[in-house]
Each structure stands twice: as structure tokens, then as C-alpha cells.
Length: 261
Image (cartoon, rainbow, N blue to C red; front, top):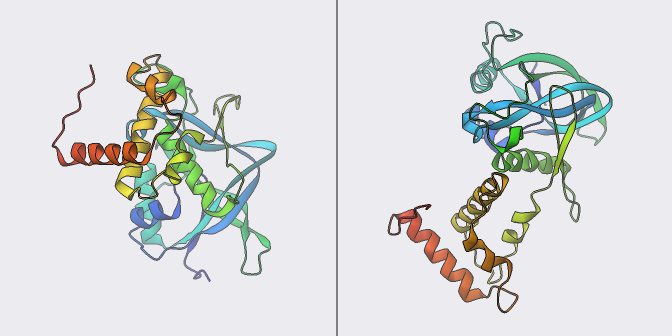
């Protein structure tokens, strides 16, 4: 139960519960299933902290739906989050920051499982430009790394077994759909051949695959990946995966230096 002094905040982007616990310095923070009607998730600009790809916002569109979550924050927690979102807490509605705080009607899951409408704060990006130059990557779209965080956030409450969560990528300037992203290329890492993938290996392999996706987006696909698409026996075996694990660990320990040529 939220305290009277707490503010409900609707999140729809990368602010899943783990990220919020870190940003708000609140390890026991809880989130609640929530969605907003007549809005759509969209992306704009570029952020150096997000691989120079676009970042999320929401925009009004009649008939739209955005799935996300709500957390209840006290004033100190809210000010910490404002700092990460580029909002000045003294003037949270200002158009001068990266984002502004806006109050919107959100349907929030109750303890009975019903959805109750609440007036919630959310963050909306001030600039809507779709940037393809000036250092932006991914032809104006968000990076796969960032989309993975958004997808994981939605899956925390809305993912169902057997269903693939897809993130619709819309331009914030005109709400045109430019992509439907599911991240299927990393799903196999959750079911390794030898059953012994540790967290370090999974994260390292995910990062590697996402970087290769970035290269492909720029027409620079590495030839060294060709053999992975056509393994001789059709199935990379346990020994192969163990070798990859050891190689990645050696890279992480600094025993092997990888140089792109």
C-alpha cells in the first residue's frame, strides 16, 4: 500500500524494477502492472549512454495502448530519478530538460487483480526529432541493447509463457512505425546446449551478438560469423560452448586482447 506522501510514477521504457531500485537507491522498491490508453511508445533523438541510439517516450494517439509498470516514490526517490531523466526537480514540467514530468491517467493493477485508474506522473521526452546523423547510430532507431532493456521491463509484468513480447518502434516526430523488435536472436542463450552457462557467459555472448547486429546495421557484417551460420554438424556441441566460455572469460580477465581489424 502506497503512503499518502508517495507519488505513483508510470514507466514504459528501460526503467524496470531492477534499474529503478538502483537509481532510486531503494533495494526493496516494488512495481505494479499498469498500462495507459490512447498513447503509444515512440522513440527520438540519441543518447550517448544508449549507444547513440534513440530513446523512449510516449505520445498521444487515440486507440493506442502502452504497457508498463507503476512504482510509488517518495520525494527523495523522485528527485533521484529526475536526475537520471534530465529533469529539474524544481521545475519538473520545464521544456528545457531532456524529459519533463507530466501527469497522465494510468490503469494500475490492484491487489484484487482489477485495474484501477490513477493519476500518475510519467516522463515525456521534450525533443521529438528523429536523428540519423550527427553521431547517431542505428539509422535513427534505438540500439538493440536499449530495446532489450525495454523488452525486459515489459516482460516483468506482461510477458506470458510461450508468447514473444515485441516492441514497436515508432518515430516520435510523426508516429510512423519503423520496426517491430523481439530480440529473438538472443533467446537461444537461455537454453544452452550443455546446460552450464553462467551469468557472465550469457551476458558476454548477448553483448557480442548485439554488437554484431550493430555492425550489420552499418553494412559491416564480419566474415568470421559465416561459419556460425553454417556449422558442419548443424549443432554447436557442448565442447564448442565450453571453449567459448573459456575464451570469453580469458577476454574478461585480460588474458586475451581482441582487436577489430
